[in-house]
Image (tube, rainbow, N blue to C red):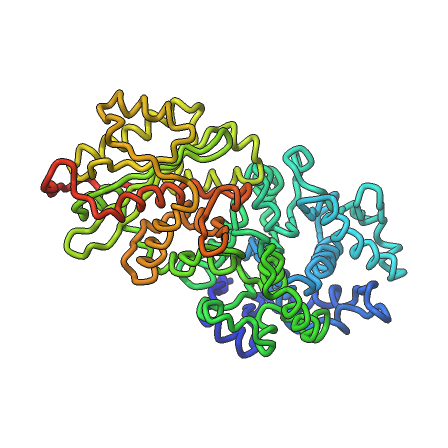
Length: 561
């Protein structure tokens, strides 16, 4: 028998969502899909008035999703042809209830004996939200109650004949260690992005699929309440690439209810006629009027609740354009990025260079920013690198996945101690000085906690006379305005580094009468160290300096991040 051909890409997804058409491909094996749908549609949703079945209360997209999952099973070979599914959907679209129905259906259909099905939740509360509707579905049907045994205290439902089970666990590496589950559903995947050990935990949880060709994993999630990070960011990026046809992977299907970039940019998501794009259950479990009312109530709030509302109920990814009290330069940051701008490229293109150093505190980043004035154009070119002690990852576990991601990007170095950081920073400063491009008094610093760095700079031949203190107060307004203006005009080009975008998104403006500034205090626990280093360098570049060694050298260096 010839194996069927299928694709999980959906190139025209934006048009489909805007016009209310399905973004889910048809099942590969319609007979298998029909068999599963018969069971799924018979399950009762107890928390709705009248306790309707899924077949009576669901929109067609739910059936399409269920059909795609179970309709990818080849009954002749026992192979599951699509092994990973990713559903990104706004809050209140019955995600956890649908999850319960899918996993009960899988439990009933499973041909193995003593097989474990697993719902993996990031917290006990989410685990309860997943288990309770599944248990209620069993109790609402006499036939199911005879077939399946519910054990509330251990969040387990067991098939009385085959001894197959459905378990719901609040996840960590210990609770999932040794699991041999063929079918796994991960609920609220965005929360796993904040767990430092999430990667290792998923390896444990999915290890049982090695010997189970019929296995699959389903990830269900809303958008994050912060900029995406860790395993959530990685998976979301991957499934976007598959959906867009930029990556070919027929074994992975992403069903992503999100607004196209152009609609995000124009804020078309605020128009009620567009709410359906991320809320396919609009008119059923989601009220258009309620969304309108909540937007009007939250709009204008500066405590972050408006941004979080948009993230959760309209799947608007929190980024530069959604941050409250944000620096206005953030509005233009993304369009001024150049991923080919490495440090060596910056030096090759510049006629003069200034540097900014932010030493940070014990749990902060140490940051070096290099700012060049481009030969011929006069544009500012910015590049940065940061360092952080490994102990900070243990202290701030929720940020560990994000910081590890920055290290993978090549923009952050995780060190064992402060000495390693200072030595590496001084080596980069010396590299810039050796180019002959560094301005006289070309190193701008926050004087706080800078002594050890100055000592190391002295050791490589860079004297204190080349260092200029930049006050971290209202006088910083000038460099901030200069960067903002140049970004607006397209005369500030940066290296498109994720760590810098993160710092920019964290920056909050503090105002007083006719003045404003950006401070670490105003930004709270969010890190802005590399941005502050840029402002330090900008304070010196704004003085229109010349290279310390006279006419700049034309240099060609090996390009490296």
